[in-house]
Image (cartoon, rainbow, N blue to C red; front, top):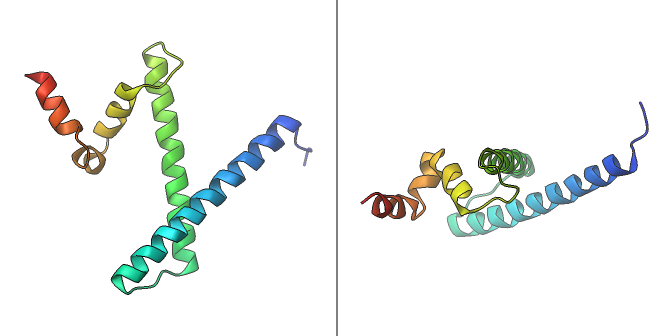
Length: 106
């Protein structure tokens, strides 16, 4: 296996730090839910939720980047976020975008 270049090593370290932060946050949220609902989460469950969350965030980031690129922009804006939210029924219905979009249509 070839040694990693400096740039790849930095990217890997950055990704590992992000994954650790997501794992920590998911653990804290699971602990709050556990205390509130009187249930427990196994370490494997927390790890699985963390991994799924991280992958979904990666997908969101890629989609947002593509929306901006499609608009011939290098900066992601609120319209890109609205487009992303529209692709997810649960996300779209839990935001005020449904009423904002309806008022913009009239």
